[in-house]
Length: 113
Length: 113
Picture (cartoon, rainbow over the protein chains, first blue to last red):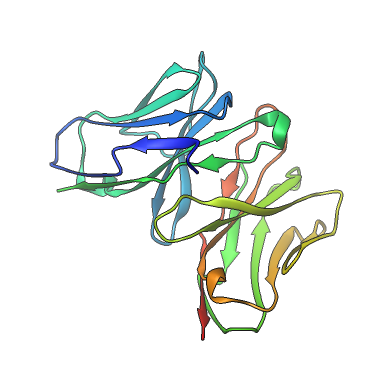
């Protein structure tokens, strides 16, 4: 969905490096999410934010941190990347007043060597 | 918390035949059940959803059924076409201001010509 953009789309990095994935949205939604997708494991929630001053841990937050810089921007950081963080990462937004449907970005493929 | 199980993990059907994907959920309080389709290289997109006060919902060739007593819901695709090939995710949530959506592990559907 072009309304939700993620940068970079692909990233290869080395163990121990700090990585930041960025997400921007033009949908005007208050809610933003970061998910991780691994083969056979579906989409697992890392962090979510229901508004600019609200940050919550998801089911797999260890090793990750987030920052909600503005309503439209939500970034995910890996402070010291490790190989088992190699995965596809998705940002999503939603609006509770619109059935809370999640709108996903195109994803960032991260490889940690 | 909520847990969603999805079966099968892979499904191959002949073009024109029907496909059925099944999910079960654990939290009887869940009342909103969306289905997402993920095409290659893209983020998931909502294709249909159902609320707990409805037993069945149809949208052209796709339909979803919900059995609250058994806590399971299914996606039915009739007259399958090549463009139906994708990964499908079911999800469940309690539609409220503090809810998070829990996704199933996904089903990779392939349509044979």
